[in-house]
Length: 217
Image 1 (cartoon, rainbow, N blue to C red):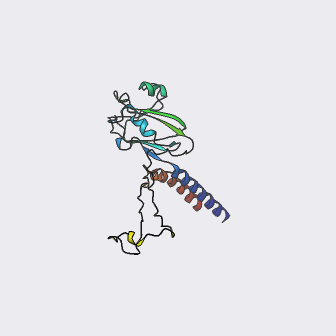
Image 2: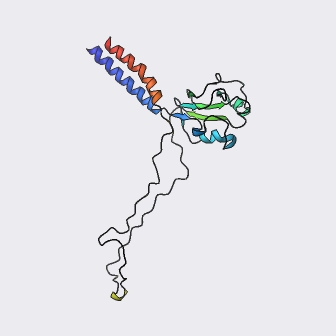
């Protein structure tokens, strides 16, 4: 009975830790709707402009969306990235798309397409991967919250002469709210650009199987 309780406790802790780690992972779709192709806008810096708005952490996943046999993905050192050559590659080129690449180390990561002159045309990506999550990039152009002006009540000592009393005009019924302002929603909730549920499921499934096997035997 004690063995059963101990194994159950260890299993629960392990699953909880895995869930926490998996929840922290982010899947980044490279280029978002642009996918992994020769940029049609943004020029040679299109992908680096995209990367500047993201935080990359060890364990995150890069998703490269491209058509098989039309593009590929190759990780290279900085010198090869700058020169758009496949010299000294880090791993083998990935020719089947779409593909996912897990960021397994902190530091600078460089990726290019080796087809034709695609790299020279801007199909290249440089990112900085952190060991732990950092602050989110500050969005630009934040709208200024609306300012509500509160009507000032007249001073009790400053009466209005009877002959200067303004004539009544059509308006809200007596006793209705005066000067109320409905604030506009200038800060819509941001929609996550990606989900890590697939990564979470693939990690938890074998762990749960091990825990169940340990409990039974």
